[in-house]
Length: 245
Picture 1 (cartoon, one colour):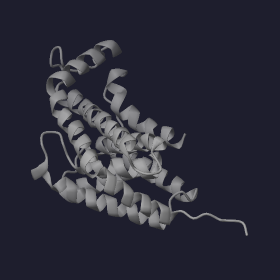
Picture 2: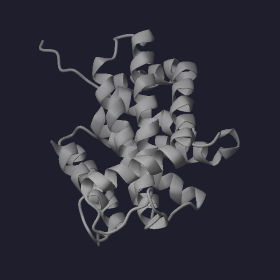
Picture 3: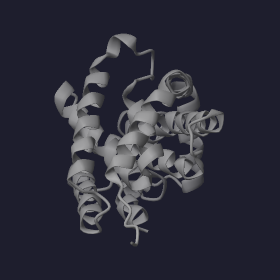
Picture 4: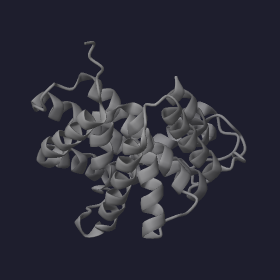
């Protein structure tokens, strides 16, 4: 329920063009940061997140900022940034996955000088990448195997396309307003808006996003086993069990 409540402002930010006639007047950055802090405080308050979890979150964000700088190995829409978000969500669950994705995106944007009006949208989208991986992790095996590779690879493929489609909505509304059969205009019906955005996505972004989805799958195939195993060991150290005498 808490993730649903946290996600509602983000969903409103993304999907208002399909239901509203005028641009949404919302402080997007304040909403994104506020939702991130609110979820973090809830997790801390319920003791699901302690100082060790926060330290790991900061470490993952720092590593991801470094990975985002490694643009020389990026191809089209692919970025190694999403790999750690997927693995963290898979091991620690949906809430931690959201925190990891959203916080890592914010830190990496500030570290790389890529901060702009698009950042709050990317924060929500990256957070949902972690959520999807966390949901997939509910079916993970006791020992990482091929089923886990398939689950995490599928999560990487789906979120690779979903991240691109979500973040493209802002571009579509801003840069393609009134662009014929592809663009958005105030007052369009929901059905027409969806049709135009579908055309826009197929023409401008589908091929680009396929590199992100494929890259996520390749990184899962090559690196997920040792990284997930390492995170599982960390998770085991974070967990304690009271055994009656």
